[in-house]
Length: 141
Image (cartoon, rainbow, N blue to C red; front, side, top):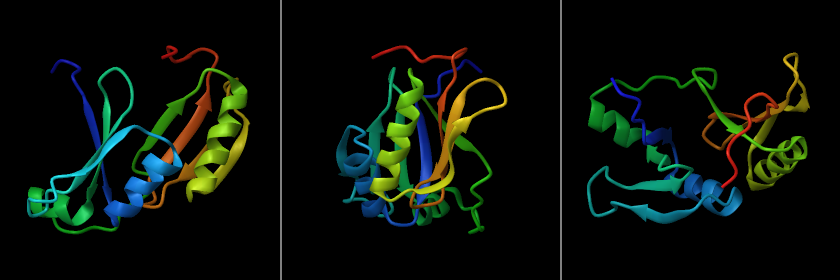
């Protein structure tokens, strides 16, 4: 398999709320909710970087599309890491997320590996880590 991941899709309970959180609250670029004309097709895409998109899709639509049975989601199944260029940016992003409706799980603090990071949950309990790692700085865009 070649590394060609271009979309990360997360399940949400309320598509409109998720759209507002990511677009209005966090400021991620999006063209809005699309696919409403299709049964279980409504989804919102957000531009991240280098052609990578974040998609938010109702959990009920994912269940219908996959045929899986509903399960209780866990916030610890995976984390989404948002790396920043400067330490101070961690605090700014954490504050922005909290103002948008996120729940702060672990306030930003020094890490055991020499960085600075904090965790928040989005309105659908997806766990995000906002991190400054001096050994793994993202490219400026």
